[in-house]
Each structure stands twice: as C-alpha cells, then as structure tokens.
Length: 303
Image (cartoon, rainbow, N blue to C red; front, side):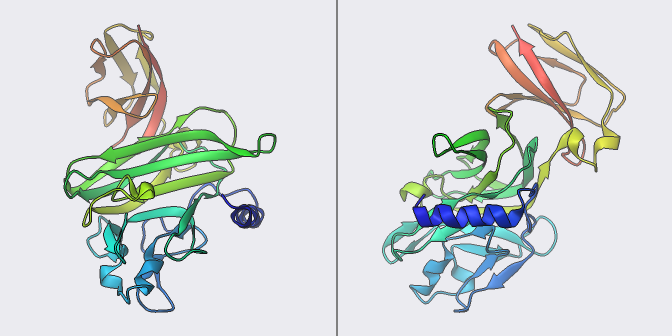
C-alpha cells in the first residue's frame, strides 16, 4: 500500500469512529451512475470498489460493464454481477471488493483493499451463482486484519475463502465460517467477490460470470437478533473417534462440520454424525437453522 493510500485509509478509520461491525448495501440494491454515464457502481463509494472506471477508456455502457447491476436477483430488485472481459487488449478480472481503486496510472490501476471494521462475525453468508469459462474459478473471501504499529504491517485476525471451479446454475447459499487465528479485535475488513480467482495476477477467462446477492454477517450468540433463539445443545462424546451425538431442544437444525480452514466436510439433519473417516484434528461444529442462520458453534476433537 502506498504512503498516500495509507493516509487515506487512516482518515477513513478516523471517520468511522472504529465502530463499524457491518457493511452497507450488502443486498446490492443501491447503485449510482458514474458522471460519464458509462457504468454504475454499488454505493457507497467509500466501501465498495470495482474496475468499472475502465469503461470510460473504451466508451462503454452500463450493460457491458465489468461489474453490473443485475435484475437476475435472489431477493429484492438487484444483485451484483461480475463478468470478466478484455479492456484495451488487457484481461480484467471482474471483481467487487471493499476498498478503493488507485488509478494514478490509468492503465495499471492498483486495488487498495480494506475498509474500517471492528466486528468479529462468526461467518459471512449469502447467495451466489457462477458460470465459468474454460476452467476458470471464482473466489469469495473475507479477511479481517489489525494494524501492527510495531512492525508497520497488517496482522491477519481472521480469514476464509471459497473457490468454485464448476458451474453453479441456480442461486445457492454460501456460508463462510471465518477461521480466527487471533483473539484481537480487527480494525479492517476485506471482502472480495471475483469471477476470476486469478484477477489480481491478470489470470482468468473472458466471460466468466459471478452473481452475488443478499450477503449478511452472522454474529451467532452475539447477535441481538438471534440471542433469544440459541438452542440448548450438547455434543458427546467430545473428543470422539467415531459418532458425534447431539442433544438439543430444537428439531429444525442442520449440523455442519468444518475444518479449521473453513472447508465443509460433513452435513446432517440427524442428531448423529460419523467422523470415523475424518483425519485426527480439531473441527468446528455449526448448527444452522432453515434460514441458514448459525445458532450454535463449538470445537469438536477427532482422535
């Protein structure tokens, strides 16, 4: 990050009051037309950024822009559509991200990732579709960081990434359980939705398309909206080498087992899950209701 970019980011931190625990316009209903009239970007511009400025270089229009407002939505009127393309002979991976695009050098813009954020959500979830071209892959990720004044670097507090290598033809829920490597309170969050996972390196395929809609952060037991719905849930035996049995007062839950890197390895509606084929280690159990809301989570030990 350049010196000027760091100054801008620190100013944004001061303006935020260090208290932002969610992001605006996560349902992507609000868009604004650029002054040139050649593209639309999701609002606010202090949070969401795209490479759409390149449409000014080719006299484009909103219907062909790299990140578009799409009426093919999961809920509401609009979703965000990322569609990779070529601009002035250069591949541009379609990416929507938190931060801003440094266009000091117009043909070599630099994405400056991250906006102020102080929450520690359990997960980020939402709905998506994906149409890859020629083996391309999509990327959806969340990274929470904190500035280290001793080393003048950013320490990663939590991270999770989801990649898809095949088509997802209908809107499908995603549930990214964040893997925290620190107990620190973050001061920044980077959220990225990319139709081409190699976009930052200029790698991908023209036409690969990713739709994203109705994204939310899940705070589980810390959420005022869900705190009254936390079930009485007990797992045994823990540690286990075979079956994990679940006792709960709720009968509408799905039980998901994740690795500590966020990979889903087991899912069951039954209150018993076999872990016999899993490798020895620590896993995370999430109990999810019919609305994909995480209502309970805990560590599970497989020996």
